[in-house]
Length: 203
Ligand SMILES: N[C@@H](CCC(=O)N[C@@H](CS)C(=O)NCC(=O)O)C(=O)O
View (spheres, rainbow, N blue to C red):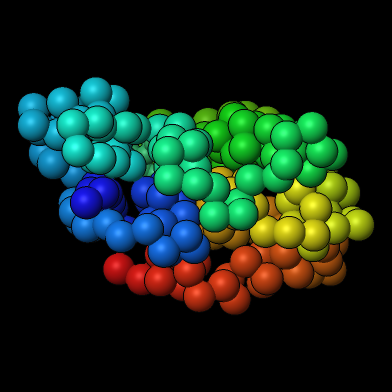
């Protein structure tokens, strides 16, 4: 059976969400968000970066949330979560799958510099700089959602799992609101209504 190494609330939520959407059977190995667990030699054999998620499938071990989703779709069928190759939706799928861990993840630098590191080590210049960059990404997402229900089109796809988790993370900060970002706010509500999402974020 598939075994997912998981820290509640972390990026392993993406894999759990995918597994819940598709109904693939899995076993959850819940770990503490601590270097003693994530950098333990036994776990570094599964994810050499010392991060979650990792997924065990027999003698295969995968890491990187996007790679795991692609692996599961290729190996076990996509569960209708991948647009048809060559379609406009597929073009957006490729873009937003990748944007989820690149431009959208600049929010993490903001989090680091406003919460995680000691106050005396924080830089107002870095905070202001990254904030303005994240705002451009948020506005670009708002525009993308102007004429579609989901990130690639009117169907929910794995790109909504990847990007939806990035938006979940961004929602903990003051980056978007219903007045200035009605499309993104409605999208986020639509995502949160999904039962598979709700099961994935349950601890
Ligand atoms: N690009 C990786 C990022 C994985 C990642 O950074 N996971 C975080 C939790 S959201 C983690 O395990 N951090 C532990 C640490 O950095 O010590 C993915 O998408 O799987």
